[in-house]
Image (cartoon, rainbow, N blue to C red; front, side, top):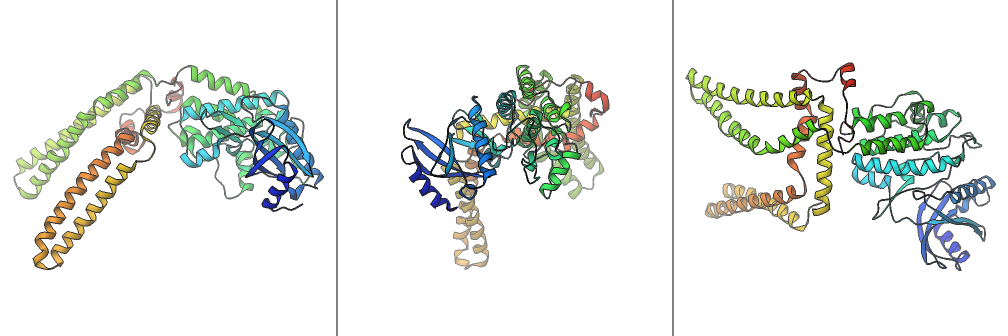
Length: 496
């Protein structure tokens, strides 16, 4: 049988012409090809997974493929891709499953880098629910990863797929050649070491998925699969909220528990993980009162901060510079420096007072950063829904006009100096006009950009997440240390 995909497609069409209208190849698995087709009798789209022709005469591959189909066909759950039929025709071994229009979690993460905590909690909960159902029937997936988590278009419903290496809990972790079954980046320590495996191995993998989706990176970065396997076995995963401070502490704790090296230290089962996520969600997705008040006050102070910055940048700093550059009068210099220092110390004192009030309520910088990040994520989602993620044609037009105006203005300035004297006046006027047009177009483009973004919130998050925020909290002497930080109550859902 030919291994050429086109030849395989034509042969498959011939073999199944009475039952399926096959559109084409849509995916490849470790030992199978996936085709999009329409089931003629029921007039519905299906995905046909066909054993690779190269392995059609491999008894072990056929047994494994049949076992995958058998396992998948026994599972009927809202978050597991259903299998409709398992059959063989003209040497093609295949099974038909529901075609899910949408994307994989891996696709979404490639597009966005990372996802908001609320979205990740939903994905983890639905995936864990599907795994709990399989575990209750003695089936361990053993290859939970973003590529095997589908997100249905429209509803965004999660569906788990590809039980290709799933086994009963009593089965071995290696294939007959001694190779470890699973994907190195998401495999559990017990799968690597050959210890008995149960549903908690899938919880470890799901913990890695959650870490990856929230932080935009894996817990371990390595040069090759062997190093990755070794680190899964021997090296504790880093704290998620240390890598991604916008993740709420309760969610980081849940992920950390999934990533424990010994199964006994993880959640007892997938249902317990679902309950933990659900309980925290029910406790609310609203940040604590003191942090909400801090954010509200920050928004109210935006205009005052702008005026204060203008006073500092337009009046105080130029006055101090002028006093030192053009005056030898020590009194005048002292007044200028004193005024500048007063403004700076006043701003610092006000910021410290706000920070101390926040901590007096039992909170610290990481919670503030998490709440700011969550607020910004929600705002971005809302603005993207209304205005789209990218600028429209008008915004791009304004931006192009601004760039063109700048180039024209610079060219006119150079021409007025280096060109013929009789053209200098015209070039100067043209350059001035182009500069004016560029300024107006840039302002218009920026206004439209700000309509679909929230630059103030972005600057606020950068400030408190970065060195200035750490310095202010450190200056106030309130960075959490030791057990004092551990004793504080962290309200779940601070990041939404």
